[in-house]
Image 1: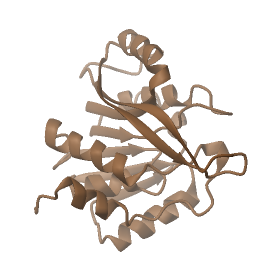
Image 2: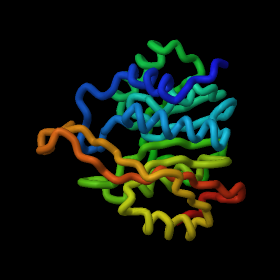
Image 3: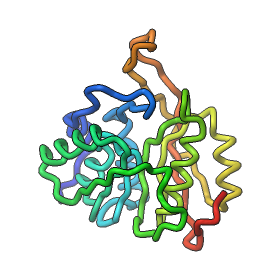
Image 4: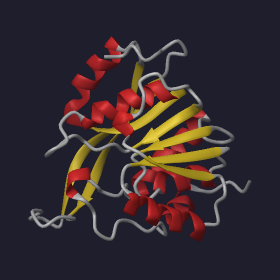
Length: 218
């Protein structure tokens, strides 16, 4: 497989279509191509957790993280999202890129069974940050991801929640490593947004999964 340079990879991800009409209740903000490219490039080149691996993308939206993982040689990438409209855009994106190692499942990520078989090597996600009507959603996504992954979970979380996440990681006996501190450029997507864009401080975190972890997390 041809090795993509970071700028080339980011340029490819800029071609991924995003939400036409984002849904506020689902906190639908697209993962920016620059952030997606940096995340996936690090996961692939530093930790070797994408190529030939079975990858899950939770809250996949229009599929930029899945498509990027596929381009980097994932054995299979499965996107999970509750929103059929988003999955429709995702499906069209996958066709446009002519990717065949992608699948998608329409479901509520937070309602997946507690004791799921760990069939995914790696889980990658940009979960809802748990604002507005979705308080605690970020941690519900993380709990599900840790129950699904054999090796590692990579996720974005607001830097302001780092202490809380660290405390939960210790409770769950999971190793947590902040790989980078990012500025998430959030474009104005909804009517209540007064500014064209807002920068949010975000941590890019790797959680190393305990092979023995089961559904007993609380």
